[in-house]
Image 1 (cartoon, rainbow, N blue to C red):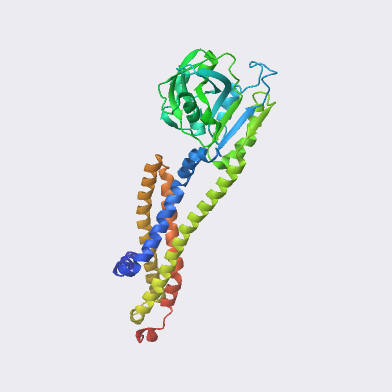
Image 2: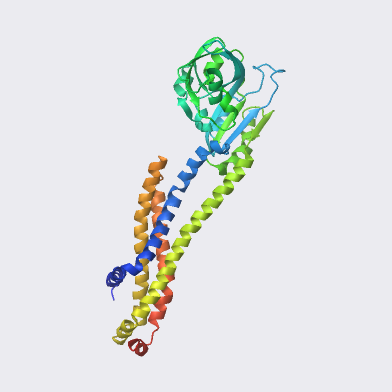
Length: 396
């Protein structure tokens, strides 16, 4: 029998028995579709989770600081990060973003002239992306405000309530060091973090307007993923030493939360992968069961074909082709389902993986479907090809 005739007959047999084959095709469809989604979108989903893990303890943020005593040293002599050091750290492999930070404890006055004391943080425009902080009210300042040295500030939720009595303070004025700052936003509350009690202004404004504002002795690095955290943290001292003295440098990592998050992610990833492969294996077992039942019900047909001159390899090829067609049918439907699922997840995440990765997953899915079909169909096919002609013809 020609190869194209063999495929045509095999697909026709699969369609003829579509009700019996439905659950097997469905299992392979779900397994193949799940495999495509997990592999194709796995990295994007991981990056999205890493970006949102600020709420779970900043596990992907590495903090580097110069510890010193400002009572013994002036601001000008206190150690801070040089711009060349900051640029080098920002370009480290595994680093997604970096932000320089400076602090000072200041006194401010609200419009009713009430006096309030709190920490003011001078920030660059990268801080919000690095820390993952979002506004509860209003907006956060960016490059325009930093480059323009504008008199704007963002308040922590608790500080806004302490000063003004409520959180809806966008547009209010706050006097800091004899300058009036416009409140353009209020940060969303972040557990019991000190961020809730602080004010944030552009670091350029702080340098220009506030006398002896604290040195840029703190730096936050956002890693691409939790897998990069330890490697980045261990490399920071060497990078700093290449550009300036690292005396007093301390590197902080949230190792406890990081360990728990990685453990949780490992279990979730393992469970998803096991579920996908268990579904595929279940489909393979279904193919084997269907082919065995098909051989029993078509025993006389096999005997007649052998009596008419069909060879063992012809019978084996026919049933093996049917198993392959059954497996490939599920895989092709699974590819279509997987593509739709990938598009849906891309829409939710606002990102898109490379088409090369998707095509690679399609190829892997088809290869696995072929192996599954051969593996599940080889035993029934051998059994069919080894039947005795007389016994098969007389089978009831």
